[in-house]
Image (tube, rainbow, N blue to C red; front, side, top):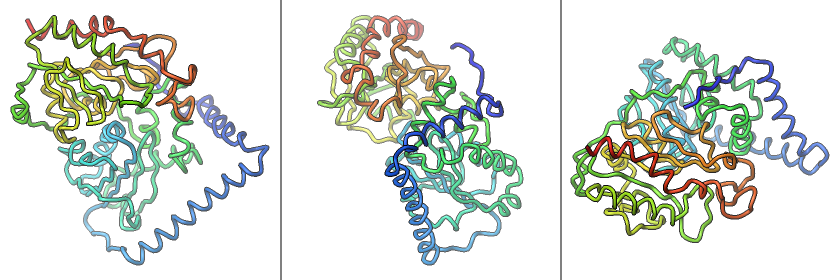
Length: 401
């Protein structure tokens, strides 16, 4: 993979470009009183409602903080991939707060128990309707990090090793200003800015989190390979693939069905004893070439073992690929609108079509309709079954001697 120059967050150029980004967003409403008023109303309303809700929960849910350990709350609003990426942050934070207990909320069923398995002092929260005053630190984490509440005195007393990270994170979050006030609205703009700065998925998470979150291949999620027997599998006698497309729904990040069929047929012809296992949900299309179709037949906690036992995993940029970063399995990942240099992991085989692609966040519905053609995306179609086969065959050949 080509080496890149990390973002220098202290560079005047970087700081100026962030100011330009904020100004660009403000420009959208500069000449419109309606837009300006809507922005102001939205921000005041959210702040007011948040204060009222927190005040009410404070009266009804306020608890006395324990004297000997910290209480941390992580709010992870994204999907499997976002939660998997946030594991690095959670792990790094807890390593600096050895006497902390952490609650994690994710909207994905089973995400906390699966993705954060092996980390001590973790438990799943059923919702985000908590009273932040009960916690010493409340962390909102997706593309970036935002501290929603903190008790700096207790952090300094009970986790002095964490204080430099906390201070650096607070400074970084202040530098981004309103861009972090409502991440649900501004993260697409931040993501697009990060892509133009030639950044990677973890750069903003590292900067706003105050800690370097580099790719660590030694950090693993525990797996139980004995589970494979229930599907008639043994380690490395199969490969997995995942087509996340859904019937009658355009999706720009999906590889065409005929490409999948051609690739799977080639695998069956060249390696007839190698089982092909399809992963996914009940909404994903089933393939006749798959020896075992597990779409809609597994739960999230099954996936680490299935992926770990796989000889190779083939996918587009999806949550399973981000989950597999904590496993030994190598993935063949096909990139279209998702930027390869932004998302790719070094251990994987990462394929992109060429100049057309990497248009994520260009338009609001970029995951459903091509920003250029307003229909099916051509970038993923340009990655041929032959190109994928040639990329993956050395791995198959090396393991099947």
